Length: 452
Image (cartoon, rainbow, N blue to C red; front, side, top):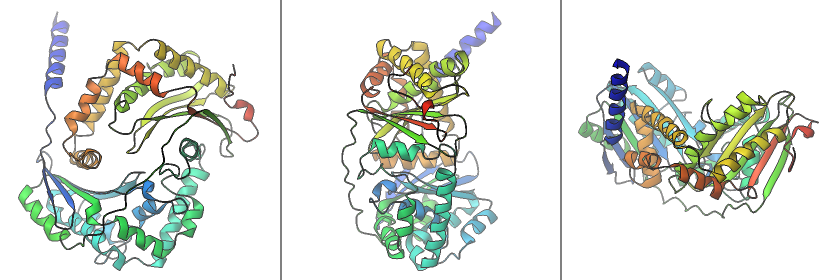
């Protein structure tokens, strides 16, 4: 009886949590130079996160000139007009802070997490490199970071087992002039060909305040922070509007089978299955997230149970909806166990996809997947850094920084038939890329069409 009462209490608490709304109050304003600023005040912990998004990613590059967005992520840490080389990290670490940046096809972001009494330091640092990076940039610094990025490409792609998988998939999913055809890091040839003048022009085109958004979240006083932001960023000159992004449609009208012999892979082949899918926040995007969890989200998921646990023909399996601003891709990835082929694995995956296409997953499977997503969603919002980045992400994607409840509601409204519907609509057998990565000279391990 006691355990039953505790269970009822837990269930009641969950229902109450479901009915409550996520509250992330913010103040938004725009400086005369076009910089969008979002402030979120939260005094739960004496820390602050400063988060800058430049609305440019590798998708804004051109064929033959790839890798610029990621190269800039490196150059931005090499000093600016009033910050000597090496002092950016040194000053932040001395204040008890940390920082980093990242680049995707759609955006480049930079952030600093500091004690709240050190807020003015990251505001100064970010404003200085936004307004005065060119004062300190030299051909030598560009060459130095170019070499760093080239080495990163070698480590992450050429010299890593299965490292060329995602560039190969992108080349086959998207036409040559599509923004997602090339990897974020760019090609070796393009990195070598990039001139100092090319880099300067890229900065002048995209690294301007009217093509950026700044979020300051955490233990702040909103009015005082507004004054500090205005103090440090208002003298950064506005740039011309960034050029619009034009791109061809990404459509697959057939199944493509690609075999890549990887000299870094010595024994275990790996299968990649990829489809085009809806862009971020479009109908079907959230449903495919839930489908990925039903298929491979944990040890009780359909593919893990069959491939890894029951049949023991795979080392691992994962599925995910890779959501992006223009269009997205849905992928299933699995590594074979020794003595097994990728054809065996593909057959099992196809069987499970066909089952969902014929009959919806159970309500319990879908609810478990929704619960898993909701838990990870809320976990990202525990600290100021997570909220700062999410406010910026929502602002860029929807124009509304406070899109938390609308985003979560997409998942809470999904039922089993929705999951079945997107599986039928998007995971078509005649519109996908199937990539087999195998050891050199072992093409017989690849996934063969119609193979058993």
